[in-house]
Length: 202
Image 1 (cartoon, rainbow, N blue to C red):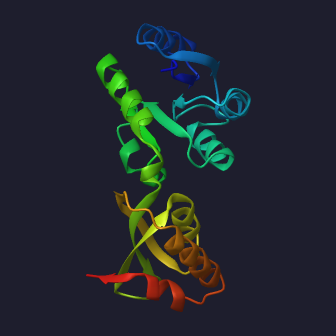
Image 2 (image 1 turned 90 degrees about the horizontal axis):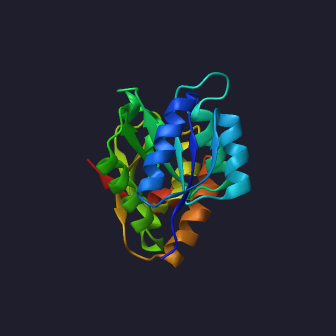
C-alpha cells in the first residue's frame, strides 16, 4: 500500500515542524506545509494530498477559510483540524463526515488512529441519513442523501435546520436521482417531492 500523503497548515512554524516530524515517524508523506488558509488552498490544489491537517485560528486566512475553499475544490477532501480550541466540536462545519478534530497538545496514538479512520472510509459510505425541518413547521423529516445533496439542502432558505444523523451503507442510485429532482424543486419553494421521499420523524 502506498504511503499516505498530507499537507500541514499552521501559523506557528514550530508546531508545523514538530507535527511533520511525527508524521514522518509514522510513515506519512508530507507533500507541503502552509502558514495560513490561503496557502493551504493553493497547496491542496497543487498536491492533492490524501489528508489535510490544519489549525483553525490563524491570522488573515484562517482554518475555516481553508476548509470551505478546499471543500469547494473537492467535497470529499479528508480534513483533520488540529486545534487548541476546546469549542471546535460545536462548530457547524463538523457536520461534514470528512472532517475530524484533534486537540492540541496532540498525541501520536490519536494522530495514527485519525489517519487510519480517514483512509479506511470508502465509497460505500457515500450516503447519509439526515433529519431536517422546514421554517415555520413543527414536524421534522428524515431521508437519505449524498453529502453533496445534504450541503445543497442545508443552504436552502426554506430550511430551519438540517443535520446528519448517521452514515448509510445502502446503494440507492435511482433514489439519488429522485432526490436531485426534489432538491431542484425545493430551490423553487416546491417541497412536495422531497416530502414524498422523506419519512416524518418525531
